[in-house]
Every structure is written in structure tokens, then in C-alpha cells.
Image (tube, rainbow, N blue to C red; front, side):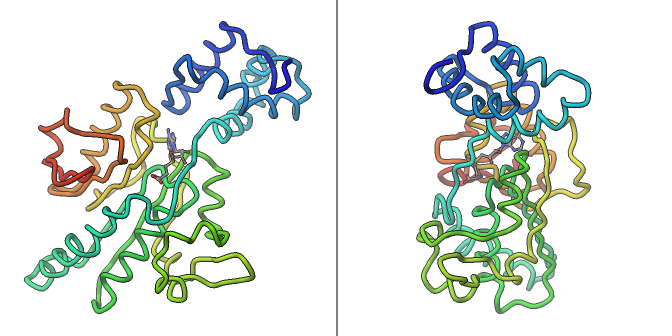
Length: 277
Ligand SMILES: C[S@@+](CC[C@H](N)C(=O)[O-])C[C@H]1O[C@@H](n2cnc3c(N)ncnc32)[C@H](O)[C@@H]1O
């Protein structure tokens, strides 16, 4: 064992790399060896294990397997997120897409809106969508609007459900939104019921063969999630998103991601925003 954690042999690395890929779709390149050691050594200590082989065996033991896989996944995922991350997405919703939907509803269009935040992490993304919805639809009546927010990591999902954030987390939130949508207790800010009631949080593994949702979405956000997947996993997931989007539905992806190689399925609209073709 080194100061930073337990040693991980090439063979052990391969076993963990395959296990993580199988369970989460997350592809660990050779550069990620240190990350595995850094994130999992604490778990070995907590379980009183002396090396990664023992941990691998523990993970595979009947009875332990399911619970410990959840712990492993919770440590491996990268949960970086922010309120109003990639602000142009929310400007587009507020100033272009939602006004367009409202105008269409006035000429007989539906008053129903379904949005999915896939890989929602600690909740900043779906809460930002919800605040944007409340702003855009505040003068409207009779709309049925729901946001589904899902993640694989159970610990981060609980943080999302709690919806309580420290002062530094709310820095990107427009100042006028804070009294409107948050309840302050000391240095902590909690989203109010109006915002929370728009969102249903669920654990969902994007690698699952099929998803339990029955109806398609108008909008899917899957931002800064597919960067952790290899090309094959990415494309299989995007094909599923295509299926779960309504005709003409909108797909929002992360700043370093692209769907340009899927022109037949997703039409480029503007930077990291696509429409189902
Ligand atoms: C970097 S965060 C992105 C959060 C947010 N979408 C954003 O852009 O700010 C990536 C999230 O994807 C989740 N994730 C990774 N693999 C997943 C999988 N197979 N199924 C569901 N969620 C997954 C992680 O747990 C993590 O919370």
C-alpha cells in the first residue's frame, strides 16, 4: 500500500475496468488507474480488506454483491455540475423554445410538457430547468408540466432530492430568482416547494436495456454524461434517446459533446442543441 492508497496491479485494473464498464458504461482508459485507486482505497479500508483482489472477490460474493456494487458505483461516478451550467441552454428555453410552445398552444397546440434530465447529479440541472419553466410559464394557465430527473448514483440522487445547497453553489443563480425560488436557513438555501413539485427524481441506469417511462419527452437533457462512455455505448444510448423523444423533440448535450455524426437522427440547431430529425 502506498500513501495514496492500495496498489492496483495491471490484472486487477483490468478486472475493475471491465466490471465498471459492465455496470455503468463508464470507460476507464489506462490513464484512469490512479482514479480507481484514489476513489476505492477508502472502501477497502472500511471493509478491512488488504488488496484489490480481495475487494473484487467481495464484490462477487453472493449476498454482498448488490449492495457493494452500489457503493462502488457511487465512488466511481464524476458528479460535477452547477446551477445554470451552460447558460445558453436556459436562455434558449426561456427566450425561444418556451415562448414558441406557448404561442403554439394558443393556436390549438397541446398544453403538456415533459422534460427528462438524464444524469442529473446533485440536482442543479433539473432545478435550473424548473426555475426556467416557472419563469417562462408564469402568466400561463392550464399547463401540465413535469420534469423527470434520473441518476445512477444513489448518494448524489439523495442530495438532489434534498435540494439544499451552500451559498457558493447558488452564485450562478440570477439574483432575482433567489427570493423567488429558495428558502434560506443560515448559510444554506433550499429550493421551495413550487420548484420541487415539478420534478420526480428516480434512480435509473442509462445502460439498462429499456427504460420504464411509457411516454416520450419533448426535451431531453443529457449533458456531460456521454463523455464518460466509449463510442459504441454512446451511440447505443443516443439511439434510445431518439426513441424516447417526440417527433421534433429537443436534445441538449454537454459543451464538449457532439451529435454531428448522427445527422440522420438529430438535426443541429445551435451549439450543443439538436432536434429529432
Ligand atoms: C458530470 S455529471 C453531469 C451532471 C449534469 N448533467 C451537468 O451537466 O451538470 C454526470 C452524471 O452522470 C451520472 N451517470 C454516469 N453513468 C451513468 C449511468 N450509466 N446511468 C445513469 N447516470 C449515470 C453520474 O452519476 C453523474 O452524476
